[in-house]
Image (cartoon, rainbow, N blue to C red; front, top):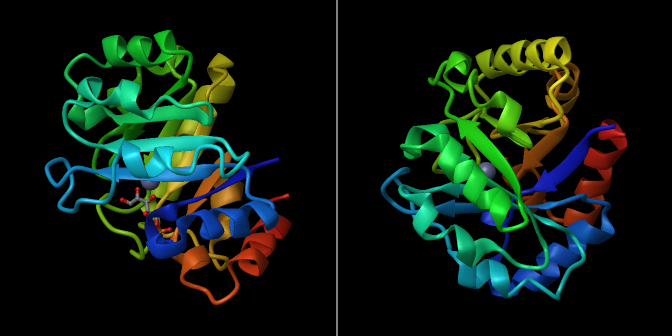
Length: 217
Ligand code: DX5
Ligand code: ZN
């Protein structure tokens, strides 16, 4: 059964705690936390301070997606009681194994992400060490983009590798997921689905979350 991780990137920040409570009531599994630095991606979102303000306001675990250069410098700031996963980008890290081991040493599950243009083969050596692989299905930086359909094939191929090797990591898809393409994303093999604008840009976030959950489960 797949899990739902709404991205608060598209939430109304003036009432962030309420936004999170709406998706929690709707049955979301995680809160997807998109951190952007204006270097690795051409946009700045928010940092650990904003994320920490939600700690204690929700029981949902944080699924932290760091779209930042030199993440080792900032990783400890994102460790809270709610933090379940911290994911870094393969393209942003020089010593991926070291970074993933560092995340694990802080008591958090370690994830790695690749952009749509990065070949899956770039992850081959690291797969035995990861808890989560996040496949970007848009070029990271902005919510509300259209899913690049070739990324569904990436998920499908990754799922085959996982099954062949009995790897324990989960596969996450992030970017452009809507109620319209959700079934395809699940069918391709995603264990966790991120959805930002297609939840937070609707009138009733709780109801939309429930609609996602109904399809996923
Ligand atoms: C993109 C982020 C995604 C994105 C998802 O850079 O990593 O999490 O905000 O938003 P939607 O679902 O609107 O594509
Ligand atoms: Zn993300």
